Length: 86
Image (cartoon, rainbow, N blue to C red; front, side, top):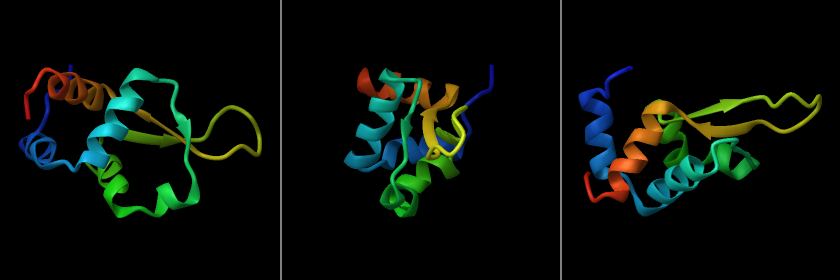
């Protein structure tokens, strides 16, 4: 299992409410959601991807919008945040 980096832990401690709620929602619904253009362009949400807590992928259906889902590291952080850590 991959360990969380110091940078990821520090980011988890300083996440905004919006980032925490998106990460929590994605960890509850791991199949992911389609990303809107405003979500893809939001630097606050893009930080979740940059820190490898969330990943963007193209669903199996041809012509569909990109989707995003939580990574294993993101799920671990969301679980810890739910317990009051970070």
